[in-house]
Image (cartoon, rainbow, N blue to C red; front, top):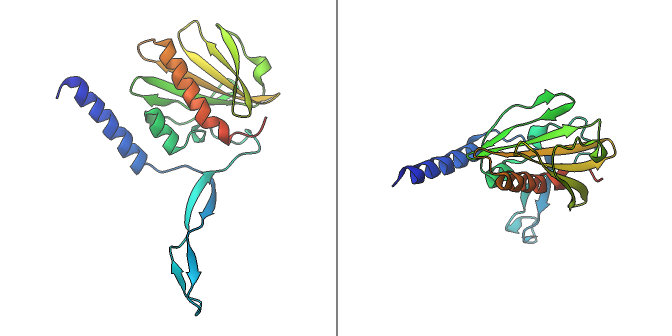
Length: 188
């Protein structure tokens, strides 16, 4: 096995271990999934009991949301995230940085400005993601943003960056993360 295969195997093992052993910070409510259960006449249940799955809780506001909770453990595994840092305040934005083997994706929450307040630093285009209006911007520094509008005065910024400077890969990462985050945002 060559050095590249060993490195890939180490990353895969790291993702599996972190996904399985970390403390999940998910919120939501249990949703019963019915199974075929009946009673035998004496009140005793027979058959397969129902199971419960957790669905992320859809917030009414971004004001108290933690940007590190915008991606679930399953989302992080899909994106290949190997490490998540604590959220921090950068200017007026609360940001969480998630590292991958090839770069990083950093969702941030802004509650003081919507899509109209984007400071343009490169080519920008309009798009829709789910029920939210969005904009994608390729920065002059080689990074890529996807901005998800939540209200006239709030948005989620998803920054993608790639270690080798591959802006297409950075945009792909930011867009994939934004599509995973969007279903859990308040309606716009």
